[in-house]
Length: 212
Image 1 (cartoon, rainbow, N blue to C red):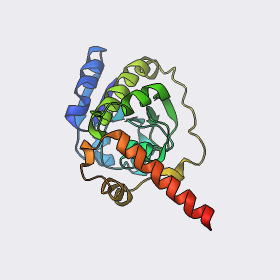
Image 2: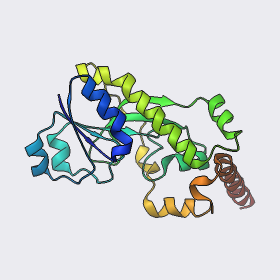
Image 3: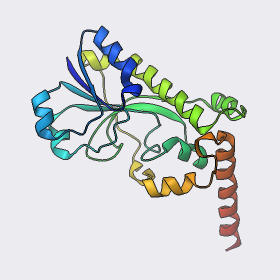
């Protein structure tokens, strides 16, 4: 199979080696491609792994594209999804999904959710920051890819729909940067502080609502 892996080299290096060892022809790039560019390459599969450009509809209709996504869908859509998950109290996890014309709205191929006891353990570790948490989720979704790939490879994978209404959870760049601005240490912020801040904000909002 000819596979085009799109995204930063550091994020896909191990995956490229894994796929090559399984006998596939792998190209890796972080460049932006037009439909014409892709038609010249003509990959059997495109894997997006941290790839920033949004795929256009003509590309999506022509090629099979999957995304390695270090967040749980549908709530983990958009920018800084796991910061939002901690802040809002959403489920934390990772997934692999097909790419359609929406943003992170395609059918799921596999998901791996963090159990409550593991999240509690990480929250109780003062050394667990947004950066270390993100690094863990990248490793987690890479391992999910390895477990899922054989079924993608042989065509036996069965896609399944995301939870309805996921469109409402999309977070754009501005509102995500506004959230991060609440934490001066940004990615060095302990994840427990992010979670506690979200809980306090929800309590405050509930008190205001009750007062009305």
